[in-house]
Length: 106
Image (cartoon, rainbow, N blue to C red; front, side, top):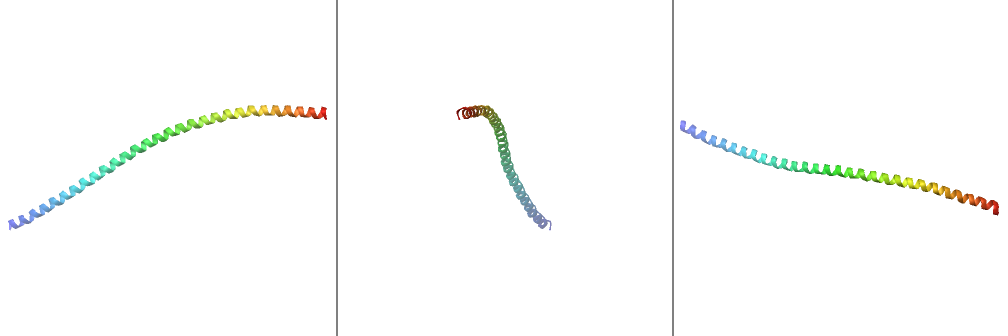
């Protein structure tokens, strides 16, 4: 009787050992998949960091370009303002000569 019980216990232990081995293989494959996922995630984070740095550099360059454009517009405005006074003086002289011409010649 002991022999038959022992023979029944041994297959159960083998079945238990096999099921534990399968479970360990599943855990190992899951850990391997997680390792791949975290590696991919680390790569994505590094790429995003590089992208953020590039965006920051582009923003600095854009700011410098905007400041340069602003300065150019201010210079142009000053030139236009000085030209405006010149045009006003020219038109005043033309009107003055026109008035004198009309008064004395006509």
